[in-house]
Image (cartoon, rainbow, N blue to C red):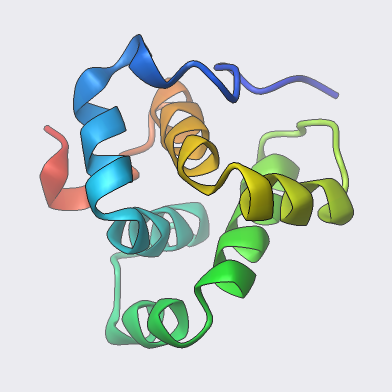
Amino acid sequence: MSNWEHGLCDCTSDIRVCCISYLWPQLQIMQQRATVDGRQCEITDCIFTALCFPCVACLTRSQIREKHGIEGSSVMDCLTVCYCTLCTIHQQTMQLQAKGEKPSGLFMV
């Protein structure tokens, strides 16, 4: 098992990702969800995220963690999302980027 590539409070490591994550967290989660599944963002991502953002954010964190073999649990994922939502979104984006994925869609080049 491994650890996250970036710390939870490492928000200033990439100021562009930081700003996008803080200004449009729902869009980031939608893109992350699609990236983890290896597909383009779809209308269903938008609907699920709009209707139940906390649940989708917890599920997405768990999927990223499992995909990359990161230690943790679903309970810790949910607690992290609930108490550090924006830092969590930033960390997840940085993790996906570190693994060569494009989690921010049209926001990232």
